[in-house]
Length: 151
Image 1 (cartoon, helix red, strand yellow):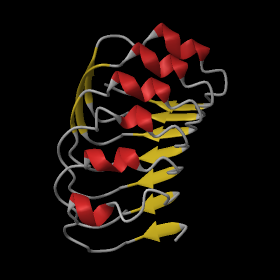
Image 2: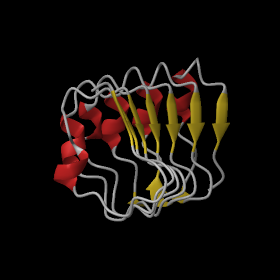
Image 3: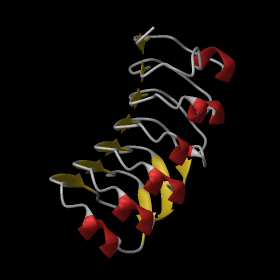
Image 4: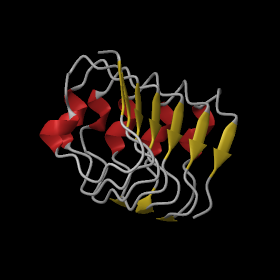
């Protein structure tokens, strides 16, 4: 299987049901009524290049070991109810191009490790509750052309 797309009105998927294969390169679970949190086990999918869970009711925190997804290029989770801060390990995602965590309930200070994302082109963080300043390390993201972040 190369792509898992489950869309429109699925209500729950448990952690064991979500991770069907550690070799799966793309998971799109957008536009459902998914509840629960993003399972830590998703970070065992070393080949994962795209992960989308837009417009769901996902709660909890972004997995702290998100940095294990070294092939992740696209991470979109807007329109959920994620809480907590963005984990510093996100700075290990060297090939990440798109990060969209808009319209959640994220808070805290943006990690300076975001500046390690040298391939980042799009950073969308609006409609959250972040505090503090935008890290000056983001200036190292030379490919960043699309950013929207109102705290």
